[in-house]
Structures are given as C-alpha cells and as structure tokens.
Length: 28
Image 1 (cartoon, rainbow, N blue to C red):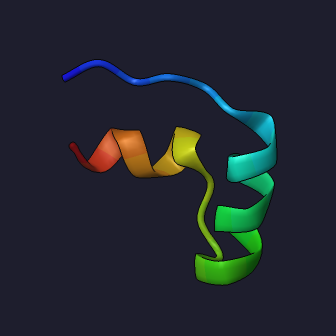
Image 2: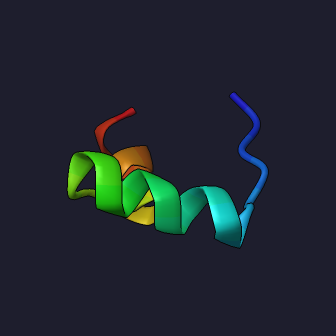
C-alpha cells in the first residue's frame, strides 16, 4: 500500500482521531 504524506491532513487527523498518520501506518 502506498502512503502519501500530507501535513494538513495529518494535523486534522490528529485533532479528529488523536492519532497521526505516522502512528496509524504502523497498524497497517
């Protein structure tokens, strides 16, 4: 699976879910 880094989405995701993309990708 390919991941594309987007800092704006990362910040929104952290606020909404309390987890960053960096942490979330560890799950997959």
